[in-house]
Image (cartoon, rainbow, N blue to C red; front, side, top):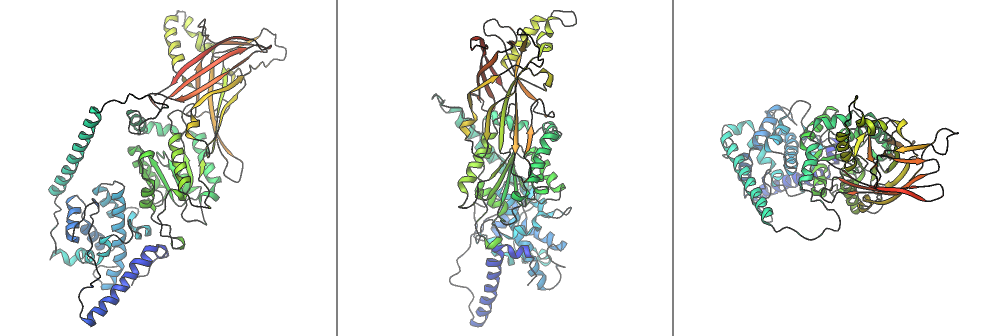
Length: 604
């Protein structure tokens, strides 16, 4: 028998099940030779499940292999090719010891193909993963010695037959007929696509003829397959968006530094089952940082944008990280079967002979860059919290809940004066353009603007509207309703007269997030006007008097602006934010002088 690598020895299934079965088979075959028995009466027939359509079964190995081959996956041909290359063994023309060596390669290839099929990879993608030579083949990882379903893969238990079929001599005297011509494969693919199209059309028809739901909604609840979601996920297939985020040094370095500082949590030296999740992984840079700088050994990145994930997988490999330790998975958080997905990707924990598949309860950290304009735009945070809650629910006694990266967030409000912008239209290079300016102003008050606001335009103090603890906050708390605030104007000159005023043209919304799981000082990602600029910039809510319609609000010395800040998910599109600010100017003696209401939309 071959020498088994330490990693393979740690793969509990191979050690306990497969090797013991080989020993039992050898012993029983010896006894059968002596006693003249041909079949074990207790041996029940096995059903053979194809790799590409495992929900079907066949009574023979040949039939199952033929079904796979007709759909574009020729397992026997793949095994023969790897064998001819000497994959997992020496020269395939040597003695039977080389067959024993190749058994382990065959098992890995079978399990690799099944896992890739289970997550939706096409036949040609699976085959290319097996045959890839540059940079090594993914299937060679010892993690693939563990099967997708323990003790229930007839392909694995028939590995001797597969070895015989894939041997060079079998090419002269084939024992089975498998149609693998390009025409057969294309016909099968067309039939499969036609079937999918028919089912999709049936679904569309059923949705279009269904009576509309006229019941009022108590709270916004967006179906995860809505047009708004499709537009949102589709926008993140744009490489330009990801370029702007990657070039945002404060953003990217904050995550990198925070993950490096939390190495003691992420590396999990004493607990091999630990998993780090990256929600909305995109190009995979945060997952890669968790591996390179945080020492995480098992990471799963998830994103709904398939185009950018393909680039992300290349970036993972470019950093010398294997797909088995850092898979990037396409899917919508609310639609993923997390138990199954993690079991498929990671199998079982091999430390101490674990046999239970790794799952959400083993997640030690959740990393996500979920922040949008004004912190909550795009409503990605609820999806992150749903995963957090699932991991907490599934964890075992004594295991702490997953750490959140970031774990704290604050939303800020302050007043800005911008006379150049508000007064520009009265004299545009000697021309009165106020009618056009009125249109611009109307749009600015109905829809927020996103600008990099210079510090010298800020004319009030900065106040905290809300402070979120991301490890405990509930999804319902993300709808910010009537949060009180009080802004005081800043008079920098000590001898300012009582009638000096500060005109506030807009309220500026910004945020910061904090990572404080490391041993050193907390890492803060700051998007306020006093920090280095980020791609979030600041969000501006433009003010006007409700009665006069005048631009801006004047605050004299001793006066303050107080009010209530509301920002909730859109009633029609949950990705958008509906914002309402009720404000009042209060004098030094407490009298209310004037006020108004901002009603605006932070939309797509």
